[in-house]
Image (cartoon, rainbow, N blue to C red; front, side, top):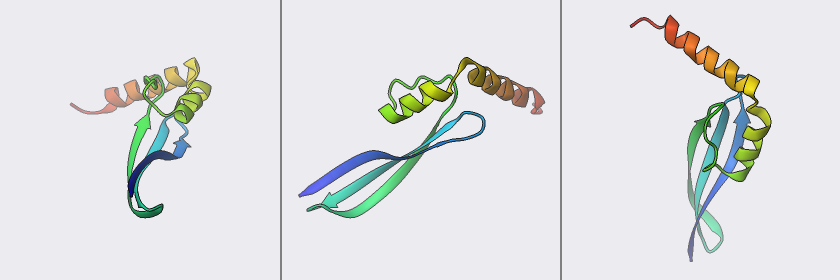
Length: 85
């Protein structure tokens, strides 16, 4: 029997408050993993996390404070101003 298992297997928080999420998709045959692949995405401070894994939602609720969101948005704005057009 083939089975597809999708799980969040790695969550990292970086200094600016971004949450890096790695999702693993594994294919198992009779309980033995025969292949897997990974997908990564980033959740930035202030982003909608309603569709994220419950663990990611809990981490975002804890670290994405109004201060962290404001600092992240200010850093992004200053980067956009500094880039030549």
